[in-house]
Length: 478
Image (cartoon, rainbow, N blue to C red; front, side, top):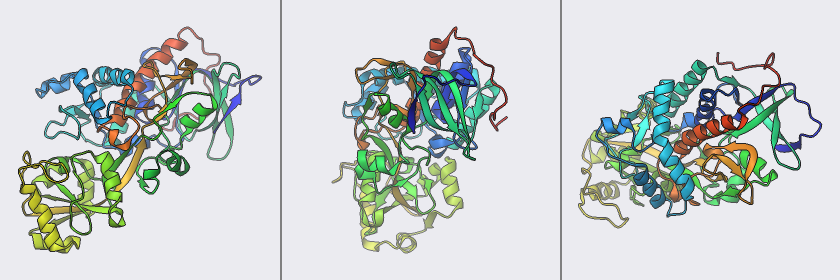
């Protein structure tokens, strides 16, 4: 990845807006720009858009939506912002926190009204750190379904998506850092140049770049990576070359509940509603309610870097509402036991220690880890168990932006025509893994994506298309 001087370069085609990445951020940005009347091209390195969005649980937190009102949930952006800062220890940038919490609800309602995305509110359990039921999902409750619906919306809106298009360089004016175009490399090694009036970086973070993880997030250097391998830190690398500011590069989202060796996300709702995690000695080792992100670190500290999720039939039926969990059942990741003795046998865990750990769920006071079981039912047979490990999902630090999603220079002034959202931009989790509030990733993806698309369209308004796109390889999607 590199920045090339644009002086003397003639582009065969120039488009008003180009977006790098077709995950939730990129597709939302494209829809917003298209709605604003701008011509837009989305570049995707893979044959089919998916990205980290498809690997996520697909849950987007938003406050004050009509979808919440329909299930009698009272919430406001201000309450949401307080929850974000409480989890981040007050270290998230307040202007961006206010921006995303105020815009999340309108964004989801716009996607519903304008682009036919259907939302349901998960109102039978609270995710860690949230004081209100505000997790919104498409009916399937998976990230793959979310990205599928966004792709359909983009196709219907006439958004051009060029696949198999890996961006390997940006062209910028040497004296202003204005982005004038980019270079893409095809799978066969051929290169193409495309000009642009504005560029939106929606290419996520650097979770797939082991060197950057070792440098910025050393505590997760040994973790399995559950995100998209293409998240190589392109935005940060380009930003550094452009003298853009970066922020909170030590931040990330982990997850302490991915079935191993199956690689399937097991919903944290099981822990929030009464489940526990034990290590290979059959002993609990943490407060499972602190948050699934920091729980990744605690799980990785255990022998062999694994733990067992222990729950019961009641929670099994709760899990079955999630397609990921259904897939885990189909792949025999979820083991059933009719008694404590059976549970010890199917997991290989010590009977006595396992029995003591399960007995703790009947306690009505705060335990030694700070968890209070008074609000949840004790675990009882028949039991269920899943062997899990801790993983890295995505990074949360990135390019510093303002509330227009404009990338900022090191002196806090905006670069001329560069925007960023989602994992390419610094999020709202502060500088630490325990600052991640459930859903922060997709929250900044869709809200900042929409803002970036709108503001980029405003920036290029009145600019004429220099050449009509023709020839070339367009999207393979339609």
